[in-house]
Length: 252
Ligand code: PEP
Image 1 (cartoon, rainbow, N blue to C red):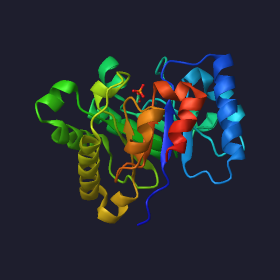
Image 2 (cartoon, protein in one colour; image 1 turned 90 degrees about the horizontal axis):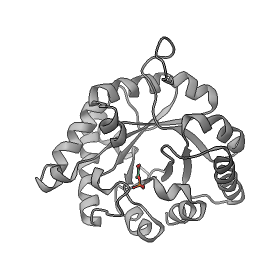
Image 3 (cartoon, rainbow, N blue to C red; image 1 turned 90 degrees about the vertical axis):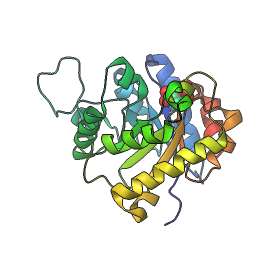
Image 4 (cartoon, rainbow, N blue to C red; image 1 turned 45 degrees about the vertical axis):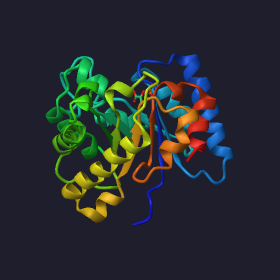
């Protein structure tokens, strides 16, 4: 199977007011529109409050829109929550699920991530399911087991290569300026591909995009994105700076 088109996804986290959203999304949209040979798919995931503003700016443009979480239900008595149907309605194509900040700050378990993934797929969204080990787990030599367990536990029946993206984000690398070595990233991504093979079948697993995330910057993007089994990046802090995010994407 041909190497899938790389995905460069920006996770804005809890950042973005109207002015900064307008400026960042419109500048990225302009660059995407004027690049005739975009060799990657670019995605921005602003906070819920800015999705509508961003959706207007990326309309009729290859720049994709995503959210950072969703509920398992399509509507109902869930104060403060946002459903997958609402995300589709506002113009989202993707949703990030199981980010380590949600697993830690909100106690999200693999079972909950699996239920959210099912609901998002049923609503017609594509999902980016995040996995990754803590520093203690890496030091204890448990990384491969932890990420395999997270992938297996977080994916529902019936996922397909077209709608599933998996992001490997070592918890200790997020927002710290530290990254695993390229050999360590390559080892985890190869293991993830193998685990996906047991879930989806080997052929289909080849088509799933595996993103690396955790302190991706313009100066380390090229070596990370060149690795086998790395099909893009999930970028936090650097996705808030238009030149840095574009430089990371251009490193593809
Ligand atoms: C993230 O939170 O998804 C992330 C990768 O953050 P950062 O790039 O800031 O490490």
